[in-house]
Image 1: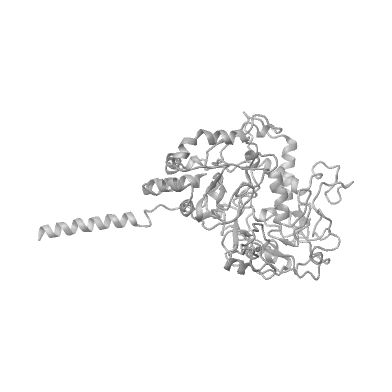
Image 2: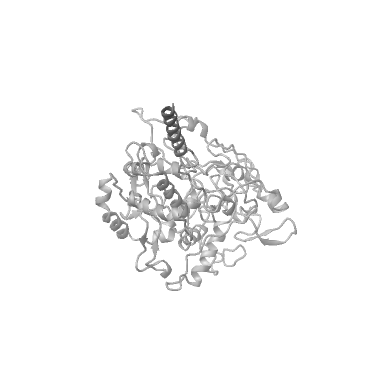
Length: 535
């Protein structure tokens, strides 16, 4: 009897310990957005909170400092990126480019105290578009960041104060599709508290939404962005009263599995990344060649089809420069033509108006500054899209937690030991000599090798861009990951642990490293999560 009781006690003890180890409270857990959503630009508790501007590139007294003229251009770029676009050249509610709006409470022109703006102060919004201002998709955790949540009723907020604000949400759920009376249907993949999603069609479709096939029955490749919204029904534009554009049948494409999603990447620190020379990227790759080969990690640069140099911006490193990114985004995301992309994606005259010039956003040549476009004003000469790239060039990189926990410090060592840094290279150096001294010979703590990797069937999106194939993606820089809400190119998860595990699939170069991660103790897995949230 005593022996039986002893065995029972031992058995219960083992079950108890096993239960504790399996308990969710002891399992690894993503600690969540660093600082909490309430302390960022898009938290559900941040009703009516003004989102801070992007950080100016740091000015360490021991290093070269940014010049006064560069600062002026940087802040002008912030003003331009914050503009809210109207649809015709004379439809802005206040003077083009003006940061001043009329406060409904006192009737005075004042600096807009909140974001997103509720008063248009720029023109050119395309008949089809995904957004109506840059920062609508780049406000997490600060202006210029990645995609987050915004207050969906800024007009009510401005008139009645913070108490009138609805909780911030995905701006693609209500704010952008319905602003100023637009009559858009929100597709199912734009969820109220989900990620901001851009959609590409993998294959071409006809007017009825059926996939087009060649003479052999093979689907014809598309791969391009299909804008979510049209301007049908928009107010404040008397030039397009009969616009009848309809949205693509997105739900049919979802059913046909003909969609590939992308979420916004941060713009912070892109000038530093652009200042890294190709030889630095290739040298870092060569330095770990044997270690990578042992783990089945390849990696290759995406290259420009024109000059053969390494392209490095976008989910597949498809863009060569931030200048290219700025001009392309203005046309693709907002439908605004410019000197780099002078042709409108949607040319329906009934939805563009009779007097809208193309390209719409160009170098300013006015003889005075009546509408802030004087050729004689150095800050107003450049087109908006050029000012966007100036802002990005002088925006500092994301800032890590200045006081990381002991677990986060340990996590960095474990992150390195299991091979994560073979793709997520912690640091690179900018070129020794740059036209802007503040960008030269600086460390860039990006945690990326800037190379393409085969991520296997699990992450494949069916889209090829440049030399990047359907399963290849650029190693996403991890700086700033601690304050991002959504992860992976399609925003499929907001849990860092799930994002790590998503790297493992049939054919993925990351399989060996993720296998090593899976074999870690719970404490070491947690340490890696804590480390990532400290970045």
